[in-house]
Length: 154
Image (cartoon, rainbow, N blue to C red; front, side, top):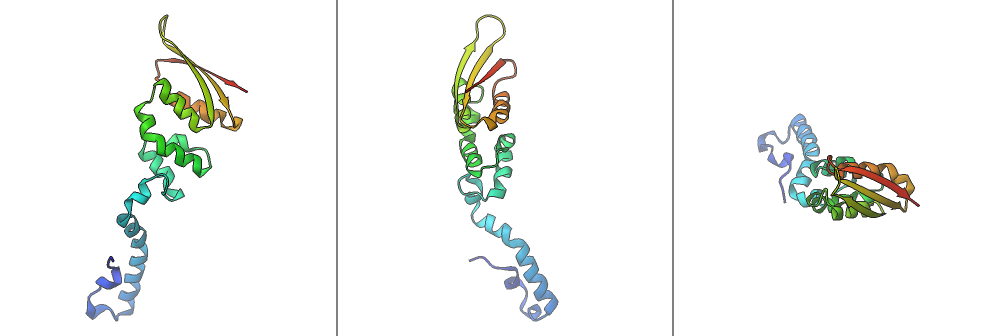
């Protein structure tokens, strides 16, 4: 068990009301820090992190813009896949798996031989309200030198 601030006050000062009050206030302020220090894994795992930590975790993993969608379950899925998706960023398989996290099915066609490289992505969304967010995710995932054509289908 960890010591609290009131436990650390010297014996000759424990009976002083102001010192006692300040020690308890300091203990209350330090309690959240103590909880994180004792169990950091809980805060770094997307499955167990408290909801208010998810945005910070997304920034830490370089995916802060990907978490605009309110459902926490959606945010947790994206964060859990972040490292693998980052490793495959800019590839057809990485893009396809990223779009699956949004509930999208995608047909991706690359044209690499004549002229500048181009990718055509035909996206079928289960939830059409995510179209703007999916467009933004595609723009962040395709290399900047590749011309991108996105077609949303029903």
